Amino acid sequence: MLESTVAAIRPLDEAAMAAARELQGRLTKPAGSLGALEPLSVRLAGLAGTCPPPLPDEAAVAIFAGDHGVHAQGVSPWPQEVTAQMIGNFLAGGAVVNAFARQAGASVTVVDVGVATPLAATPPAAAARAADPTDPAGLSADPADPTGLSADPVDPSARPADIVATPADPDGPRLVAANVRLGTRDMTVTAALTRDEARAAVETGIRVAAELIDAGAGILLTGDMGIGNTTPAAALVAAFTGVDAAAATGRGTGVDDGTYARKVEVVRAALERHAPDPADPLGVLAAVGGLEHAALAGLILGAAARRVPVLLDGVIAVSAALAAAAFAPDAVGAMVAGHRSAEPGATAALRHLGLDPLIDLGLRLGEGTGALLALPVVTGAVRVLHEVATFDSAGVAEK
Image (cartoon, rainbow, N blue to C red; front, side, top):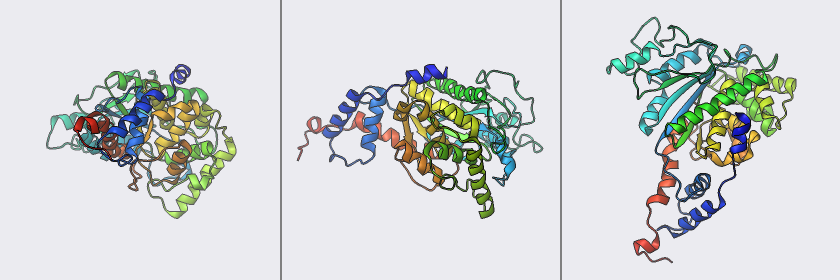
């Protein structure tokens, strides 16, 4: 699956891009007055192979979740259990990503690709949300288990992306059970994943992209959840771009100076131990990546193969985008940088990819929040080509 997906990724369509540039020059506005929106619209036309490109009316956020063995090195003050607890919050509709998705009219799909805590297929909290409009977060379902994660777990032997939970609210978030393994290994001790595990995660992302596009999504948005996942993200950024570990590593959830220094040394130690080769993206993901990073790389590849744009979120997404670009350089044509994360590794990754972020608000939450805030900008760039009159059609004199 991975090889056939990579083989299907093609360069942007030059004729469609030329048509979009020509159309931009005839619209009732000064040339270049829409700034970054103009080249974005041109690139989206090239991706779609037509001018104007389709409006990205059906947006789908895919939140890939996983845990990390390197958490044992003290790189985050948050307990690992928070990953599973936040999945419960996503499914209950109570997280920031849910609020932004409702505002944008985007669907939310949560994919367990490597969470260490077994998850319930449909948490009681999600059912409570649908049943009780006075408790939209669904947190009153069971005070002893507010996240609804104590129900029977899904079968861990199931093939990735074969089990799709049906939410209690059919219009609400849903859970895809695609756990490759219960968290990665500690990358400072051994490779985080085997090559087969890394491939399974990448192909999970490809499958999820296909499912969402087949269901009508016109644009995919990247989301993530995993306590400690900015540490493997920093290692991926350093491995693919060549920047020093300190330049790739940030404070994540806001760690103190001592934890930050330890985090930098952990990233450096992992890179020295494995010496990952950026020409071997599967090997890099296996050595120092996370299951959600690998799955996000697959999501990007799957969308690029279908010529559907992917709106990237923060540092987790752009570290995965580096892997996707290493698999298939033309995949960059499908990537839109939603925002510039406050994590320094995000800027290094975007520079390497040649992508300019649409917004810069100092965000560092993840989940897909920055991508959702940027979605109206992408839609606006395309809508201009559909709806703005030309000088000729409007009877407006040109200079």
